[in-house]
Picture 1 (cartoon, rainbow, N blue to C red):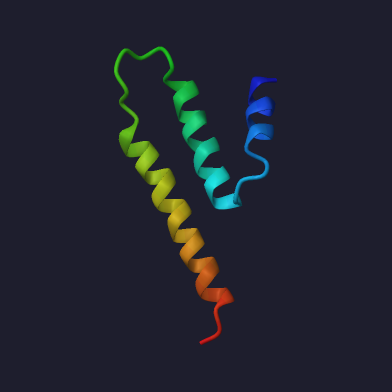
Picture 2 (cartoon, rainbow, N blue to C red; picture 1 turned 135 degrees about the vertical axis):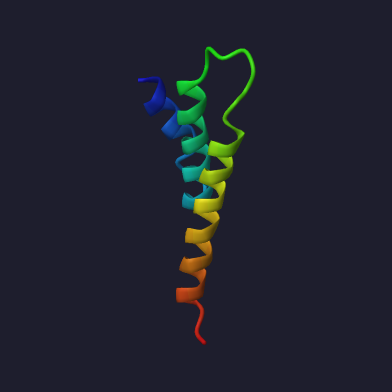
Length: 64
């Protein structure tokens, strides 16, 4: 139920940004009990993957 509410919060965001936010929230939920954040690399992977997809999408949309 909480995840659905979070999804609804970001439904108007750009899909690429929304996917980053939701991916980061998933990781945070998995590691919420940790004393110190240890998910920097995983978050970086989410952002990098989203950026690559967006670059690919834009290169397909732009005429050569």
